[in-house]
Length: 427
Image (tube, rainbow, N blue to C red; front, side, top):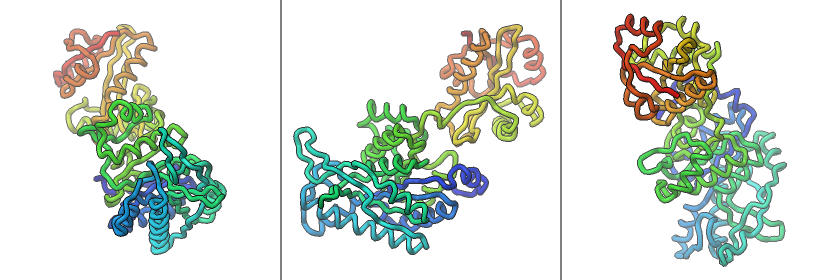
């Protein structure tokens, strides 16, 4: 797991998040975990940076524990199934205890918090012919209450319970509640602190996924997602992202530094569901020279790229484009045009090692090809010493010879002595 050793990386995010709101949804099992004290310290740091925080908590573990102590059978522990009268009473007791534990923890860290009845709910009703009894759905949120608390530097603590104003209490699912709270507060982040490992599909850990990608996984590969407890958070994360929350994070809340490492680092440690524009490719600008040169330099150190000086990069910066994550370039490539031959060279393709195996290289290649087509070019070529199979298998290039290079590029090829493999792709 990355450690927060680079303070400059933290500073990069502070202007973006200052005076904005994070909604943090904490599983009841995470509140009971030994790491909860560390999470409170992390929240204290967020508040010191003038980041507003609203806490939504679950109580599933506590409901199950109370039921076991009482020798009582429960109809549902997470607010997604039927809630009978006995389960509702256990849920109220469990939720109140968790709320109290959180408020006590906030006080121990010199943070002000307040519980409240901000959730107006109505019965979930009859679903599939079955009465859900005391299970509810959020009807509306007392947004003025929550905003007033935040404006006075008080952290709202929101339990998985709702009220209808007529003497009825309903059990709610905290994952779903967090979505509604995040949307109502126009939060820039919804962060699920889960009591399970980062979601994965088969052996692949889901790191950065767009709304569409996450939706497809849930539709086509739902039974292959592990752990199964993560499915609820993925479902609700997609709902939140489609509802306007820019970034939804799912983090193992039992891991030290997980919250801060996810919020204040490019690569993160959990799963990020983001609007499709979160990651983007754009033309490089003069202010990107330093970042691009650092990427190119790493490629040169591993002998993947032809040696270039910073002056070379600065002189050719208009040929470069970058792939951004959270406004930070994490990959680059260049397209050098040979108009007389109607060809272009795809060069300096490099992806930061922390973002490998995420399909970024392929996106850079496709971007370059599309751009070359708009210029009326007929062919893109590249030279490689270590990524030959990648360009052939992933990029659709074919092996070629130095004789197929434009004359000026052939001269440079001969002088370099690298004997790189020439690859080409015609449109």
